[in-house]
Length: 455
Image 1 (tube, rainbow, N blue to C red):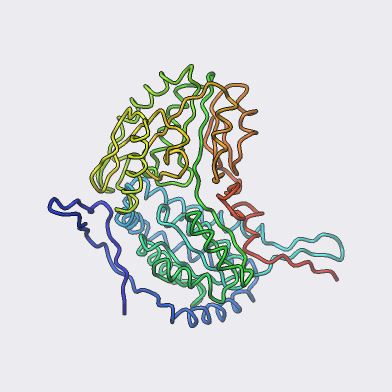
Image 2 (cartoon, rainbow, N blue to C red):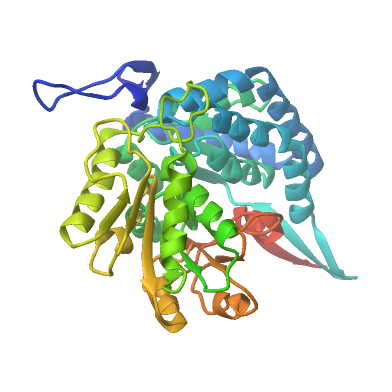
């Protein structure tokens, strides 16, 4: 049986003699073949019918009991996240802890959203299962992102096929195997493989696809799901802008720009990708950004006091380098760092003088880079912030006029003097950053079929 090998990104090395890459394996999982999918889906349908026959409260109790099993493997999950995608242990622990500790509240919130609503004496709104749901999750938050889609799908009475990124198969395997100590057989199944398997899952006899990943992959999923009119919920990345106005709290804006650009080594869909700063304060802002960015420590996931880990793989490492090299060739100024770093790390980098012709401005970078441009007129800043196919998040730092500027930004989540999103709100993208959304009652209900029952 074919296996998928997971590698530790922190061990990728440039061979001094040639361009070959060496890597240490973390472990293996069995690949799910396309010929196995019909049986996997058949088992999922059988399990789903039995699961849907339970009451919502019964499903909630079972799901919560399953998640309680994760308490015994929290450290193992955090370690695997570090080993498989390079996230430092502190952040990996936060990801696992948040998933496990919030499970009871999350299940209760979903249950409330899916409870039957009595409209009048003769009419109900019911939230019914869809059937088999495929959850296709990314590598950058391999536990949290999968959980955000998986739990509402299960609670709604669906069965779930979890297809994780091939970069983090072991995290998904442990997650699913642990939950399955309590969940009914075949209700939740993990299918492992590359994008070819993912495409086969989308094309198979399922009812919904919940996906977090790239815009390009999302377009393929949408096209392949069209023939079956399958339900879709997709979050497709971002190229998030930040506008810093002349009357902004300078220190707060600097802290946010650096922290947001560097979080998870910049490998986060809501990382700040473009910073537009009023030219009257730009010199001071840039100086303070460099000073703060210089304090970040790069290293392996299990080293103490590390802020920035390795890029997840050589392809992502090269993508960031290519964007930096393009900016350098087109006249950008590097205030910190360079456009040439050996594997597996990208050092903290601050680039200014970025123009719309540069890839750094047009595309999502997914690396620890602060990208700064100056503006002389706020309308110019708003126009550049909106000149993207993406529209996930955006932030504005400023005084009384900041909210008026924020109202003009084309994004699903906008923050004024704080990050975008957060709290009990949907996770939603505008333009090509999203199709549907998840989180809160309205998002949880997207994993169900609304039925109007009149009697």
